[in-house]
Structure formats: structure tokens, C-alpha cells
Length: 137
Image 1 (cartoon, rainbow, N blue to C red):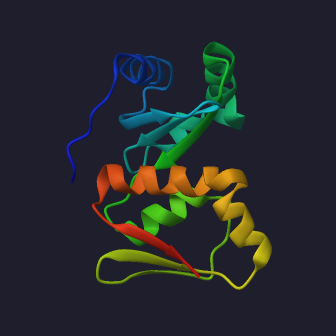
Image 2: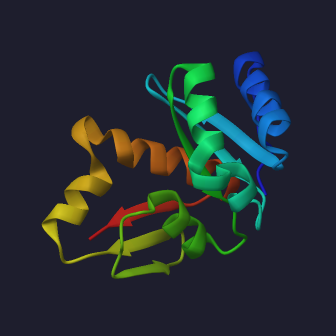
């Protein structure tokens, strides 16, 4: 696993998240609109809370959208967790990259996002734990 660097703001976000949800936060990063939390395997339910109550409380506190991702040692499963709720046809590990295949143009466009925002977030999330590239077909 790659050594992670957190700035004071994201470290604060992680601390607040752990106190409010009692879920183990492995990583936290953000962009302009969203704060992303990567939680330990099996902690997703605890992080979300009953009916998503923890997400709502965190969004009110941070005044940003919140996305929670469950970590997995298998890079293919981790990619599926990052892009959830999108359903992908296949995610395979090639030599130095993860190959994501989906025949639907709609899924591909949602995966890439406006101005490649979603794709950049996906790359960032994967590069924080696995030193590997992404290829979308």
C-alpha cells in the first residue's frame, strides 16, 4: 500500500467522521464540491448510519457532498466500490493498469463526468492505494 499524505483540513474531516460514525477512516480527500472518505472493509454500514443519517449530518456540518467508499485489497473490487452505484460490465487487472469495460455510452459518460471530473477522482482514489493506471473502453 502507498503511504498517504493528509493535509490538516482532511485530517480534521477524518477525525470528525470517525467521532460521529465510529467507523475507521483509512483515507480522506476532497475536491471543490465533495469530501471522499475511504473506510475499512465492513465499516460501510456504520459509516452510512441508519437511513443515511450519518451522511446527512456530515453534509450539514461540512457544507459539502459526502461520498463514502469501502476499501478492498482487490483493486478490481475497489474500483467497483469507487464508482458505485454505476454497474460496470467488467473490471479486469492488466499488467500496469485496470481495464474498465462497459458497452453503454451513458455509463461511460457518467464514469468520465463533465470535464473529466469523475475520471480524475477515480484515478486519484486508486493511486492513493495502488500504484496503477486506468483504461476505459
